[in-house]
Structure formats: structure tokens, C-alpha cells
Image 1 (cartoon, rainbow, N blue to C red):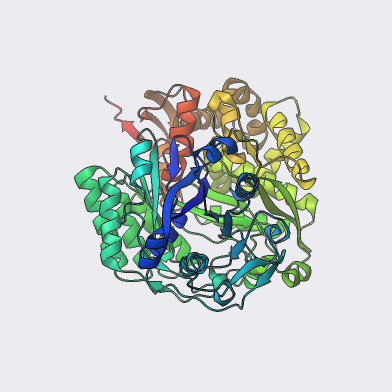
Image 2: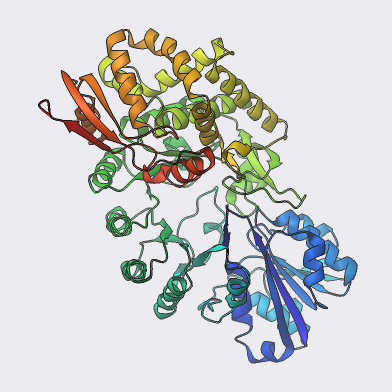
Amino acid sequence: MKRIYMVQPSTVYGTNVYLPYTVGSLIAYAFADDTVRREYDFGCFIYKKEELADVIARMEEPFLIGFSCYLWNYEYNKALAAEVKKKWPRCVTVFGGHQICRESDVLHGAVADVILFGEGEESFKRVLLAYAGLDELSRIPNAAYRRDGRFVFTPEEAVCIPQRASPYLGGWFDDILRAEPEISFFASVETNRGCPNNCAFCDYGNIKAHVRLYDAAMVNAEIEWAAAHRIEILFILDANFGLFPRDEAFVDLVIQKKKETGYPQKFQVSFSKNNPDTVFALNKKINDAGMSKGATLSFQSMSPTVQQNIFRKNIPLDHFKRLLQLYRNNGIPTYSELILGLPGETYESFRDGLELLLENGQHSSVILFNCELLNNSVMNSPAYLKKHGIRAVTIEENVYHVVPSCVPIKEYSRIVVATDTMPEAQWVDANILGVFIRAFHNLGLLQCFAIWLYYEKGVAYTDFYERFIAFAAARPDTVVGELLDWMEKKYRDVLRGVGTLTWQDPAFGPITWPMEESVFLMVVRDLGRYSREIRAFLSGIVGDEALLRDLWAYQSAVVKTPFLRKQEIACRWDWRRYFADVYDNRRPTLVQAERRYLIDPGDVPADFPTFAKKTIWFGRRGGQNIVSDIQEIPADA
């Protein structure tokens, strides 16, 4: 029998690894066919990056190997395929996945024999049948195959897989779970496939496939499987979960299994952008069950010009403000996503977009992504790139919260660093402003001061943080001055195609960190010096020294750090009520009155690595980085 191996190495997140859902689905679908089962034998999945020699040593006379390619494993897959070809020149290598397009460099090398574009289940099965003599490669649409030393392309056709096969229910992952019980696995499930949108930056809606529902009974059984196998996080891969009424039943079942078994512990989805009331109801259920990592209220950009350029329409700001309040009233943390580098964006429009989000109450979390050019996206087409003057650089893989691989094979990202409306220098400035706002406002270090200045002095949020950046630039020997210099060098290196937008320090564990969390952690590590130095900046902008001292005491007590414990503080102003009004989207009134507060941060890890992981990485989207248990002590107590 012809032996098959399937390769989908994912990134290791601490002690967590994704089960190889994509290649598992291909195998489950193919082996549902009687002929495939008769002709082929399955070897194993390669789902982590290991030394190539170790992977080769585990293989036994492979006849065919399938490689599922993404940004984070493409170079590794090519290197492994090259080693396979050295040892087994006649082994058939099949490449597919989101990273594969008709311009991929595997078309010009010797590592691939067959390349599949778009959805792969039916195409992969037919490749197996072709090599069993029961089909022809030339008849398989959306493919390329090697003939006489060059690739021949087959016709492009719209392909719709009407029903998927489950690798979970078929037992395809059972050996993985038995072999590595020390690993906490993540699992992914599709309840439907396809996307009605066509956002220019995304490579999903561009597959041009209709949205179709998959069998509800199978999805329910997969949820049961995840609970029984102690899956820590269950991901729903739908592009628009919440689009269909039946989605509520899936949520109810996940919550039921969590109550019965303790698993899955978290439930993550990409919600529909056009069903806000339904999405809220689902988010509330997930959050009430303790399974949420926060709800997304995304924009990508606040600029109407940018929205038009990327074929997207945002929810109205007044509706966003209402939703934000609705989520907050129900104790559901939210975050909003922006993408920097989209065509039509300027530094001013990007800054104004951040300002609008903050003014409308998004103080907890703004997630900023640098725009990546994805191979199968509209944005990556030559005509689109030329029209908008897009310049991109290739840098090391921009993935954070991962343990860097011990395998010396680097992966790469293509980052937009300039457009015809945002030159490189403004791209650097916009990134730095975004980092300062997320590190010092969303993560809390100066949030109270920025809010007070906005309401009492009329200082715009972004004006406050631009002044803070200027303060740092003028004082290079301070903590924030050193951090600004570090950031500027990081971004200038990226412009030259060097380095990456992540940071790693053994003091905070073995994983990589995004820029804003890096800045926050560096400040916390040098908190005493930072606290002394920052007073000069605050004194110049606040003016009232008594109020500054009072607000600083409150601000310091409500941001979680490894050193924070339950404490009682005395204030001359009623800050608790003031900020409660702000977070409830009411105009605050500052009352000067003696107050005592008992501030309980809960069990904050005392060591840096655990604090960084649990409070910042795991906790920030759930709002766990800011103290919420603040009680006023009666005057006669």
C-alpha cells in the first residue's frame, strides 16, 4: 500500500499546540472513499516544527506527502520537502493552503510535484485517485502538476465542498493525544464555510465560494468530542459566526459541556459583522459562562476613504457607543481592531481614528495590526498595489506569544510600510503613537490622567499621548526616552527589511511579545524609576500638585503589577465615582471630598513570567489587567 504523511506544523503557544485540522480534514475526507482506503495507508501527522532529520527518521518509505502552507510554516514546509526529495526522489509532494497562489515560488523549484489552489478536500482526494490510476491530474480543476520538468495548470473552477468530514470523529487525532498528554491542545471546527464579504486585505472572501452550512449533528458531536478530550480552547473557524439562527444552539452546547466537564475552557469565534444584536446575545452567554476572551467591535479604519478602498463599511459611531455601553453594563470586555497601512490612510486620519475610539469609550483595548499582504487577497494584486502606491517589506514572521522554534528556519511576513497617502516616516510615527496609547492607556499606566485631562482640561487623548512622546524624545535618558529610542530603531530596521515587530526577554518567560506589551513590561520592570521620572511630565500638564499626587496614588493602585496587593488608600477627591461615570459613558463630575478605598487586585502573580502570561497575555482582553474590585470605606468605619 502507498503510505501518506500530512504536514501542518503550527506555532507552539507556551505549552499549547493546535491540532492539525486542515490536513486532518483532507485525510478524513479522502479516506471516506473506498478506493483510497484500499490503495493507501496513513503514516502520521507532522504538526510541530522539529529538526528535519528527526522528522525524516520517523517516516517509512513515503509515497505521498501533503503540505498545508500558511505564513507561519511555509519555509519550513519547503525545507522539509527538499529533504524528502533527497532521500526519496520519487515521493510525491503536494502543496496547498492559504499561502499558495499562482505566483508561489514552489512553482519554480523542485520541491513540489502537485499544487492545489483554494479548497482542498475534493482536489486532494482526486490526486490520490489519480496516483492510483483512477483519475487524471489534468482533469482536476484549480491545480498545477509537474510534467516534463515544468508545471501545467488546470482550468480554474468554482468549487464548493458540500459536506466536510470530521477528523475528530474519525479518530484521526487520537494517536496525537495519546502520544503527548502533557500538551494542552487547541481544536478548530467549522459550522459553515465561505464569506459574503470581500475585504481587500483578506484572503478568505476572495475564494469566491458561497456560504454553506455543514451538518449540525456533526458539529454537535465535535463539540462533545472536544469536551471529552479536554480541549482547552475551541475555535470556530467560520468567517461570520452568528450569521445563522442555529449558531445559538452551538453556543448553548459548548456552555453545557463546560459545566459538565470543565472543557472547553475558552470558546473563540470570529463573529458576524452585520448582526450586532444577535452577536451581543451570544457574547453574553459565552461571557457569563466564563469562556470569553473579550468581544470584538472592529473597524480596521475609521476613515471613510479607507473603508471605500478596502470594500468595507463600518457600523455607525453612535451605534458603536451604544454597543460598547451595552457590553460594559453586562460585564463583557470588548476590544476594537485597527489595521495600519491601509490605502487612503494618513497619519492624521489614523490619529483621528484612535481619538474617535477613545472619545466613544473604548478605553479597555485597541488592537493594532500592521497590514500584511496575503497572497490570495485583492490587495496583493499588481493593479491594486500600483493604484495605491503600496510599498511592502519582507521581515521575519510577525507572530507573538509563541516560543521561538529551535529549528533554524525562519518564516516571513510582508508588511505594508508606505502608501501614496502615508510615507514611511509617518508610518513609523503612527506605529509609535499606537504603541504609546495601547501601552499607557489601554494597559492602564496613564489612563486615569488622560481621561481627567480630556474631561477637565479639554486635552484630546491623542494630543496627550503626542505630548508624552515629545517628552520622551526630549529626555533620552529616562525610561520612556529609552523605550522611544528602542521603538524607533525597531521600526527603522523593519523599513530596511531587518528584524521583527516582536520582543523577547527571558525575564518574562520564553515567549515573544507584541510591541505594546513589551513596552508595558519594560516599564513595570523599572517601575520605581519610571514613577519618579513621569512626575515631571504630569506636573507640567496637570498643574495642581495636590490633585496630581492624589490621582497618582489612585492610578498606581488600579493597574495590576507583580508588586500589587490589597491595600487601603485615602484620597481627597472621589475618583471611584468619577471613573465609574466615564466607563458608563456619562459625563463625570469630580467631587472634592475625603474618600477611603479598599482596592483588591486579587491574586496577582508575584513573579514576572507568570504575571506577564496570566495578567497581560491572557488577561488584557478580559480586562483583568485593571483592578475592578474597588470599595469605598464608610467614613465611620
